[in-house]
Length: 124
Image (cartoon, rainbow, N blue to C red; front, side, top):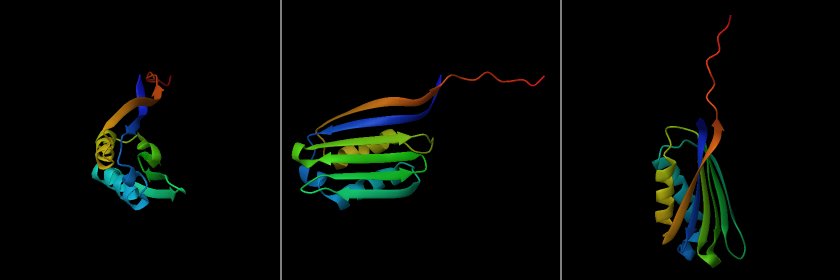
């Protein structure tokens, strides 16, 4: 069996709530994590909620990085999906966790697109 990609699901608890409500900071943090770990950024969109919270997506050639924050709970949900070999999703996760000052992070790794290996076909 092999997988087409890897999905990292981060539960970032006990984060700095001021950072979780700072759209420009979050945008820079995700872009920096993507670029520093080998991703090819192809687009982005971020939105500031009222009274607080931010959601954002960095589209990368290798797939995406997403964040949604709840500053009132000191919590951020981060998803990193990669299907490229040049992008180090785990290193990106570590950088984002550090930048948000999470004191209680956890990560789940899900293999996506798990396919059975195909036998070589012969033409008769």
